[in-house]
Length: 497
Image 1 (spheres, rainbow, N blue to C red):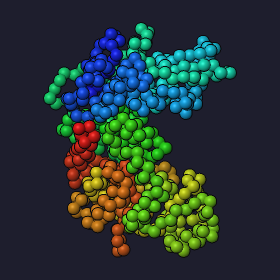
Image 2: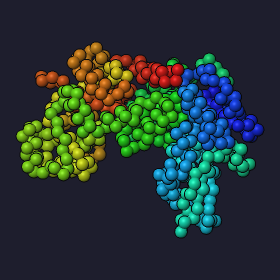
Image 3: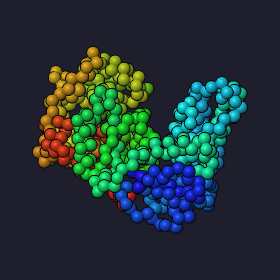
Image 4: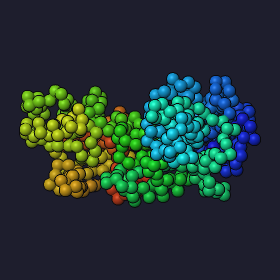
């Protein structure tokens, strides 16, 4: 991994540590050398440790030239500009104040009139300031900063944020710098060069405790195995690894996504770092809300069951009766951001509509009401990069109208499945799925459809479709996992040359 990082300094004398395999350059040499010859695929990363970052200084031009050369600079030009004046970062101060007030300070710190806290790659010397350091580094990607805090009344409040040059690292802080640098770059095991060394590093975000994950453990292992054949190192990471995103070439989210969830923050951070990511943040926004999907599919004349969006403040008994007349009974009510058959109620009567809507409106102002269209199975067409990838049929769970039956005792019943080749699925189903997925983007989608005597209808488009070992891979087997990883490689190379 070290090959990817270039550390830029004003003077070589500022560096007091082993190089750990990093490329060290003076800012003069970096600015003069032009674009770096590619020794491996993926974007180069420039850690700008110059003494000054103000406009037209060496540090300023270092980050400016890095971005012009399609390298990822730390800090970026946006960071340099945002931290150039207090008025531009004032929005973050209340959040940092809160992190500071939540720190378990000792007596001397509590009584102090002021504090200065060094933050290095988001790490702090004292663990009580960890939350403050992490949040600061999430927003401003400066390698080295000092946070100033002043007492106002009975509380310490953040009064200023300043970038720090490498020459300002004190002897007592050198160990912190080295440890945080190694943690950020993911370095310190020195490997011998080998023609079999991985060319790419892919992070798979997952939750080992998730009840219904998008990929089961055997599927995750299959991704790791497929990566070895493609010279791609695949590493499973959890929500705690947010700070490590820049150490990878791409991010694959295999955890159920939501806009108010850490999965969305991971997607946004990966995009900010210039990494290909599936699911991208835009796909998460578009796919996780069924009300939005309804509007989008309807606007593009993609066939769906007859549906209407209900507003909490406009839904009463009279409207429930009119809805029943328009859509017919039974009617399915859905929370817009429900998943895995959760947040759905089948209303058999107007009374059921009122009771069910009242129950679901607690969670969302808007609900989706959809005509009930029973079929013995649903189609799921997987689409990757605009091309159909797999085709599965999911049967309804026994004696139930959904694929997943969430019982009152907390258990889950699941229907059977059948996986076919894409060519073996009905052409109309595959083409309708492809059209629907194209409205979402060019990521990985699972399009759910129903087929009956009246045609093919899209139920929803999932941004995080299941790829489970023994289910979706029944036909393609290992080629399914390789196809996904090859798409990541294509994106890495297309993005960074």
